[in-house]
Length: 397
Image (cartoon, rainbow, N blue to C red):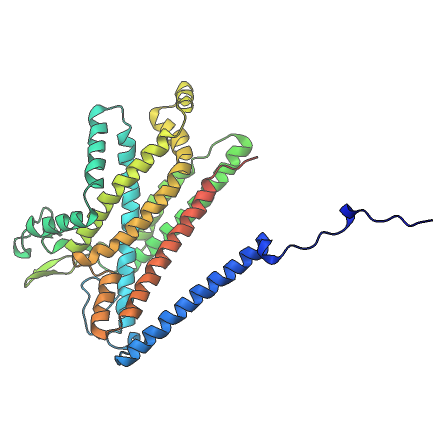
């Protein structure tokens, strides 16, 4: 009996050549692209090293340990010209973080208010908000910085003729100078108590939400936290003896000594960045609110909710899912635009690095540090906002 012969269709088909296999072809292209980028990087690095060696220019970051020999007008930490370049650059980083953080907070608040005002049924409020947005969006941010810087120096008198509306507060072309409490352990204790209250309030708010989901009963976590945040620090201050001594600013020579001062450079930079960026944030907020269906708003009003409650409970929680991604981009833009501070004399990281480059001649290392610092700040902001965006995203069942 003859054995059955295998059909041609059951025979294994020969493997196609690798140039016709999409997976293998993609792998080859990736290897070639990686090799090209690596070769280009090696060429640029070796060529740069050779040119620097030919011109006898030092390389590396050993200069960070040397004495900086220049002063910095504003610093969040103690600094003098006898400190190292590393500490000077740290001062610049902190100054950049200071203006960026305060600017982001103020921009978010102001932009939200203007965006809501843009949709107001009041004709005057709506037109004023629209005019603000159109004006600020169409004036370059650098020009706005120059304008506010000139205002602070030309509109206010010299220190000897400083405006003194109330005791301990002076306004002149050197900035805003005001009295602050003298150092005392009570104030650090109050700060720690406030932090503890805010953490407990956050935990209480989460518990209140879970309780409401299970029982339907709400818990006034916000009001309890607000009451504790006002009462407990005050009790702490009273327990430490209720210190009231103030560090008052006093005019000595051509400037004030004592108190706390806000420089015109910082004020102009902060004001320009906040006003410029808040105009874009306002449009983002407006678009996010208008993305909510009209039917939901009418249903909320039919239930008897007041306009403020409709905004807080219905509109904003849903519109945040539309607002957060473009809002993140505006936060990053504000941080990167803060590098324009060098144009008005504010000593941010770019200004300190430029001075370091001028003194040491190591431009490549300086520019590389600027890139790394701004990349780190931008990535940190993006990671936080992406995490918050995921928390606010709708969960499909």
